Image 1 (cartoon, rainbow, N blue to C red):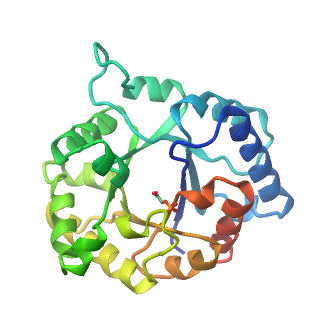
Image 2: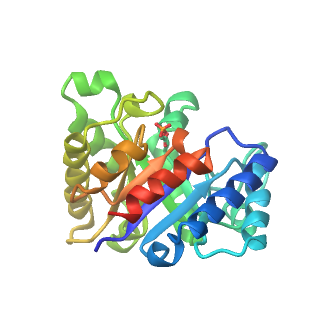
Length: 261
Ligand code: PGA
């Protein structure tokens, strides 16, 4: 049975009180439905709150008696370790806040904040050096898909990682997120997602020069009603969920779809 990854990217949402409520309700619901023990070790849950809610999330997790223990992650990081970088956050700051994972290269960072391959590579390296797991996002826009350029774009985005060793490439978690499916309610079909995830795995093996096993998640309008089908595809190892991760109820529904997988 494959290990499944269910990650929730909260983006610029969720104040501290909302964060505490989410964890209380989500963990209580998992426990009351007896879902925790059975699948807690098989499904890895991670939540990526905004920086300002990390402490509230950490506090909620330490004060809840729980059977599943979600990991905490950040939505961004800077590659330098300290210094005059106003507004930025370092890997050690994230670790001190309880983070084990960091999202890098989300399409919103690429499109709205101009983050380019070179910077993303530096961020991935900083995370690996600090023993944080990078969750590296990539995916094509609608125009690129319509122009039949999906594989060309994906190849180029993943090639940003070609300086990493096979051991490092294995430590990264990959999230294929077609830009046209993010926050639009229009998910890729399971066949479309499978095709790109399978291609990504082959490409990463080529970059590694050896048949490594990598984990590739799909993201883009994942909800309870499509989670199970997406996950049943051979090369999709989990989901990076945005909108549907903001409420304990809707996130639990996806967790349940995974639990019964
Ligand atoms: P969505 O976002 O689930 O709201 O489409 C996914 C993401 O951006 O990671």
